[in-house]
Image 1 (spheres, helix red, strand yellow):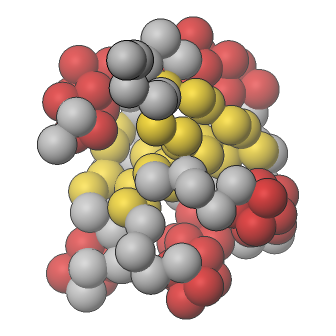
Image 2 (cartoon, rainbow, N blue to C red):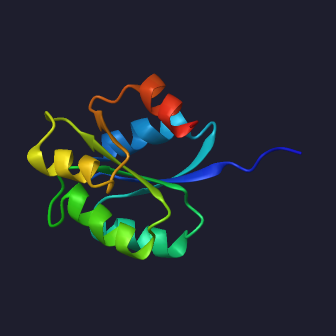
Amino acid sequence: MMKEKSKIIYVDDEDINLLMFEFNFSDHHEVITGHNGAEGLELLHKNPDADIIISDMNMPNMTGIEFIRRAKAKYPDKSFFILTGYEITEEIREALDSGLIHKYFKKPFNVKEIKAELNK
């Protein structure tokens, strides 16, 4: 019997990133995308079986860390990751150290690196 695809929620305010992510990961995962933190929280609510949540860092209204902080409060057992086009910030470093996020990935994202992490 085929293993069911794991669900990934990916939140990014840029459509091109959502499309690229979906293109690269939908072969082994069910990819659900949202454009901002509020949408991400809504998607989590509708898909409580999603195991992995990946968020862009810089988005309007709510940063990726703020979104993850809210999401993790409701869903502490999920794996959260940040994707950023910038160098690691103090906020991201704290999120890593406190266990809020498992890892952060740099943009443009390295598909192999993310796949290796998701397969753990």
